[in-house]
Length: 214
Image 1 (tube, helix red, strand yellow):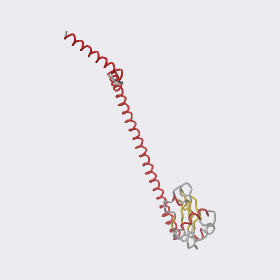
Image 2: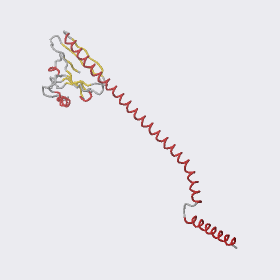
Image 3: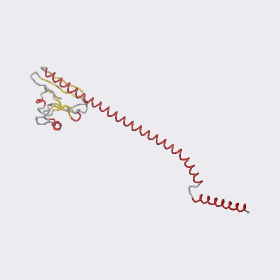
Image 4: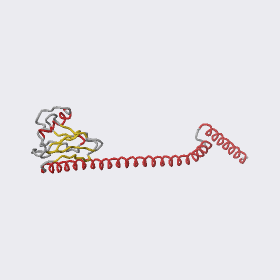
């Protein structure tokens, strides 16, 4: 009799546990079945995540490489421009030295007439002789008004545009007959043609100074 009572109690407990499990599975979203499904989805997602990381890593590497290439190109352009600018400045310095030497040689001669030809940077449009103490006049008055800012400097030769003259826009050339050169035009300008300039230099037997013209 006791055995049958115990068995009936056991069966009733088993049924109660079974009903509770069924109730918990239907009530809670994260049941055993849901958890197993979540695990399978998570397993599927992990390889995709790794693949995404690889793609992002490759994209970052490509972007970084492009940035480096652009950086090196910019540096190369700056270096090349510096070399070109240095070359232009050297040409201006050589022109001034050669022109001074030629004027002095002509001044030491009793009589001479020749054409002085040399290279000069193409960014220089005109080489001008001017006396900035005297009034500006003639065909190159606009240039004269611009270079008049150098009035008071000991100079009679000017490069135009001044901004392209490597910060040495004016020079003093001894033995030039500036009064005669600027008699009709002040400044008197000689055009630079394709990086070349031609200046006629002359001195007569009776001249104390050297005259120049285009």
